[in-house]
Image (tube, rainbow, N blue to C red; front, side, top):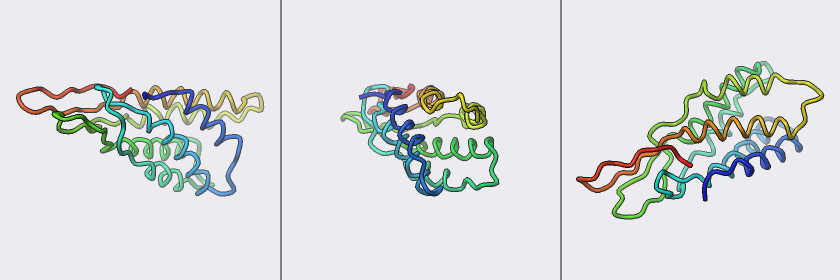
Amino acid sequence: MALDKSILKAELITWLENPADNIDDSADLFADAYDTYGLDAEDPLANPLLLANRQAIADAFKTITINDTASSSAIKISNGIILYWTGAAFDFVPPQVSSLVTTPMIPTSISATLTTIFSDNSKNTTIDTKATQISDLLDTATKTVIATIVHPPPASPTIGPIT
């Protein structure tokens, strides 16, 4: 499979429509939503994702307090998503030696737009609109993650964005 933005959007709608009773539960639901989407990622040779850090998203989200602004909340969530991909591993087919994320996304590429989305408290903004905005942003940012597949010498590694 490959990353499918519609899966992320559907998971985010569920998260937004069913507010949790506390920050820990909300963090876990958001992390599950992103992880459900992320687990379908493939490296540039279509090797499936084997391991990513779902807990990093939940842990980062759980640090949000009532005193956080939309901007500081967005930065914390962005950092969690980056940590999700840091060191992520893909399954590989021998003679490939390894397939790892070597360049996670840049936090500012997510946090500035998330701040705008989080700051919009208009009663006219629907859950579907919010889910679309967040899924569009995260899907675009996620597809900038770079994986490197190492081949036996003398072959050069294959380097490219995940899909």
